[in-house]
Length: 295
Image (cartoon, rainbow, N blue to C red):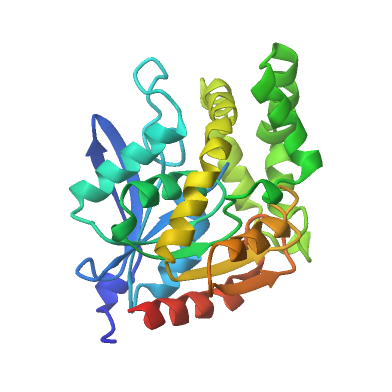
């Protein structure tokens, strides 16, 4: 494949106005090529894909948006923008449409799974491949202990439960835990990750917005059968690169994809939730090879 020019290969940063919301995105590579859409997780942003963008733009076009309320994108008032996964997916879809991107390889991690699978089930023929990095689509993928507070919150979202979830997942220590738990070398994980994410979480209104999304996550579980039917019927080429020590989405969730995919490329790595933070040097060549293979 012809390599992109140096200018195209560099990561670029821009905003697109989508229904009066300024959506920030990072991109690299030649936009004339088929897009690889990098969908981030909680509590991160497109920042989590920085090494993918910096290293693969020589041969591929990659675009990584920040959802509304995350990263550098606008954080509209909940009175004007309802924070649900349906709406995050609609905004992402509108961004891609405005950019003229109508076919995608979807890279999904954490919250990227519910956003990406909504796009995939709405437009199955547009999906040319999946790159799954701790992006859950199966009940087996939930760790019983770490998911218990959120599942309890789905049943009754009391102030006491809100405070417990906020302390566990929205505090500085909680954000750091998500990056370091399960890693081989916690001291080797860049602290800029949780420092940056925690700074975004300190904006007025973030606590309630994030709690709204935690509550709405129950709608994703309800959609799992639909997502699994898409996998079974469409059989998209799929690369699974999963941190098997993830305390949130455990390795059983990665194994479960094999129930519906006939021949996924499957890799487990001895690390935590954000698999790229510790194993990008091993995963980037896998992504490159996978993308070259599917064309």
